[in-house]
Amino acid sequence: MLAILDYKAGNQTSVRRGLEHLGIACKITADPAEALAADGIIFPGVGAAGQAMRQLHASGLDTVLASAVQTNLPVLGICLGCQIMLDQSEENNTKALGLVEGSCRRFAPSLCDEGGVPIRIPHMGWNTLSIRRGSPLLKGIPANAAFYFVHSYYVETTPENIIATSFHGVEFCAVYGRDGLWAVQFHPEKSGRPGLAVLANFAAFCEQRKEAVHAD
Image (cartoon, rainbow, N blue to C red; front, top):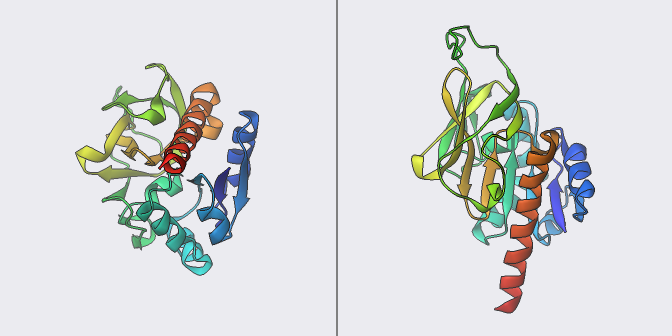
């Protein structure tokens, strides 16, 4: 069973629907014990970084995420979750979770697209990925697959963390992490078959890790 963290920050229901469509057992929960007993944690979110961090601190779910990382329980951050897994965000000048080295920057209005036209903020629409290194999270996904993005801020992290990038006036990190601790800037639950494949890959990794732990 996968736990979808409920910290009053948005799109938990759409993530659940995506997983249920795939036949993957899941539950939206704000209970720390229940989340840590799951096979993996999905950490979605929409909204502002400052408010989200206040909700995480108030609910104790910030310590749940830290414990999950310390014990190698798989975690997948989505959109706002992807941004606040880092050290800091320019949005609301927010100190974030610090699970992965990096920060979140606002798209500059002076940036232009490939045709020289000023970009729109927020970035809202379909983009392909440029894969920088292989990952179980992107297994079997075609190179031309497009994913749905909605964001005004973008991730900056160390090169070794970057799995894939995309472009909106500037090349930005779209997928980062290591095996078992991942984050995606796009919304997989709103990205059709490629997005559902990302969720299925995460669930499969969680199952494999659980089996390996039990085998030990």
